[in-house]
View (cartoon, rainbow, N blue to C red):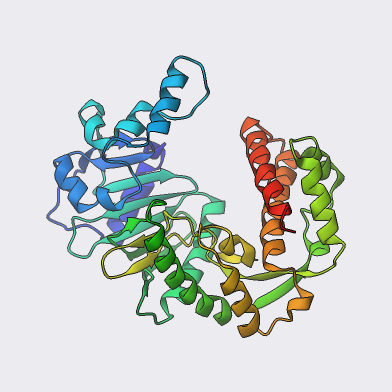
Length: 371
């Protein structure tokens, strides 16, 4: 996929001047691991120390015995699984078996994910991240991401680091941004104590971010993806769908409001990085005016106390909005309805969506017990 955009990426590198002039001007050799291209002219151990250990890629073999068991069952066709051997072995062991290819580029790592490509430069004096939007949707997303990241980086915090947008460029052919690079690791589900401490810092910071931007209240009747017969029929036909619809209808009848504000949009453990000194929030690509519930429900951190404090500081009457647990339920239900609505309208319904809706209904089933 990346080869299709080589000329665009070459133009971005030349125009942005992100690599040193004395570097090899003809490009570098790379090896591809999944959707990531990694420089192959540097020993893999050095590459790990410099950048791979801070990436989301697995370097050492997986110690998850359940994952290995699922892979073995898949081999013998006892169970379906998307796990691949190289993902379980990790880059360190699989590196010698990866094919080397030449790319006329100079990034240390290239993430090939639509609608944008991300180029990481860690071999230069000032380490940088370059994001290149490749589609109309990617350009719109980049515009929102840059706006949010600039707003976020302007907020002073001793605990949270937000990569600054160093520069941006937009014309009819190319849209890209250059931002600071942060050397930090994503969080592990196993270290619950560290998770709690760091996500507490994250939400203390986000309180300032939310309150700095406009806050709106929205009735469920205003959402264009809700209350469609064809969407509700689809939900009801799936496991636990009847109960999900029943709970939604009961909450809808309360005629209260959801809270809208500019959110981060994806506070998963892979987007909250940390090192010994700082916690960093990256990937603001999904940041926009959206339901607060999306951020409150996107990590394993309990945000109930935060929600109550937010109502007080934002001067929102708690009697006019849904409760914390109701907001979380409705946030998930609305997102599910949106994907079903678009899938049916665009005729893109597939097995992945069916399986995802099934898993969401199971989550909504558990959540409805507390409502």
